[in-house]
Image (tube, rainbow over all chains, first blue to last red; front, side):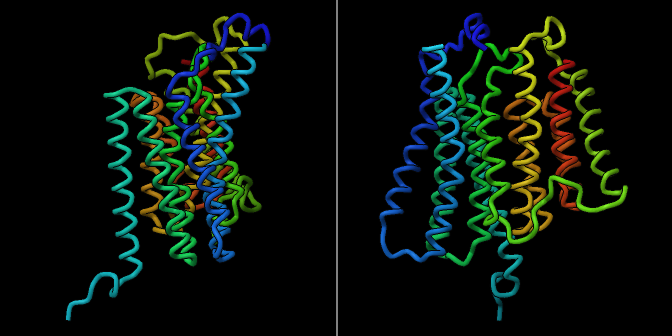
Length: 78
Length: 270
């Protein structure tokens, strides 16, 4: 892997603007999750459904973010 | 006295409203594709992100207003996978060393999302399609093997039919090419898991065979948008077959194996 990165760099030193679009979407969902969590007076069933929907939406975007962060770390420090 | 469709046939009215929702979503996705072709990947990704967030908001709204209507919440939640798929394809980092398919990295978040949704018990009230054989005897095994072999044959056919001038995986093979091939093959299995294992059962539960048809159209659309018309042809043929087989047998193993084999052979032999 190290040889591969050395011979063909990942070219991730500059992140393309399109890479920020899912990050913004992730940020929106995370903020919304915190707002909903802090809101009082919800039924348990309603709160569970909300948590499920937001988890399903947040999970892939979080994976993409971690992937991008990991690759960037490899590019800089690899 | 004339009665409305809602009063005379609630199930039919629900199907009609689902069809209208699917058409509205198709129009929004079509518009986003047009923006992507005209204005570039950034604005295309913005449009898909907006659609994705809008569907999630709609699911949250339904869960807040109608907590008992879990089926509609589940349908909206899994429908958001379609714009999410396009968003990931457009915005995943492009790695030049994956020479066969530099943007194949989108498969990893989408695959994990597919596994997460497949495991989620709240999405389905009925039994979900299995990733193992549904029963004893040779018949279930024969059906799933036939689907996998069909995927294999379509992969060979696709590799032969698709015009390709890029690097070949079998000539001077190296780790970079094989990583690209592995991700491309994984995309086949991920697609089958997400569309046939997650979206189709939820859509079928809500709208019956019409839900299966809508799910097939959605999977055909994402294939064409990612691979182009010529390469997506064999994938669409396999999708048609797996839609019917998974709906009838409630078994997913042949579909996933067929999807992986199709993409593997198409990437290796082209």
